[in-house]
Image 1 (cartoon, rainbow, N blue to C red):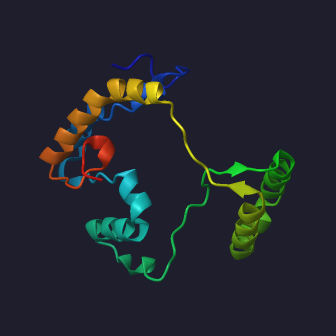
Image 2 (image 1 turned 90 degrees about the vertical axis):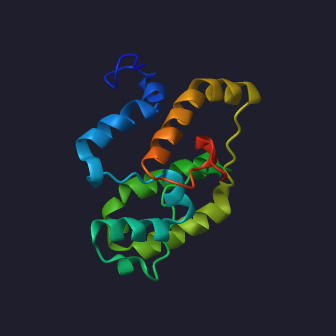
Length: 163
């Protein structure tokens, strides 16, 4: 199903999203050492998901206790393009400074989003969504079957789960 591969093929991202094509190879190579973490789980419950991975690895997950995990590079729309360009330039130009003062960066970022940010709403036209469902639907169904066979439960809605 792969068209050309990641080297220069701009459509490989579509075929690369046919996860069912790769699942069995990963299982054969890693066997019991394979743990699949769905991005949906990480987004919905970042602390619990991270602690679960730690437990699976035999690591102490208590490092996540009391930590507020948050999205660092969320997608947002902005009101002023000029202000956005200035913010990007300031961020890029002072990267070493921001690494030394992450709380200051977070505070300024929060203020920036309040002043110049707008909620990001992804809009996919119905005909595009229908086409994507036709393209990815059979692959997602096979992936759901493969994950279920491996013992995974509570799959997300895009895999036919109840979410």
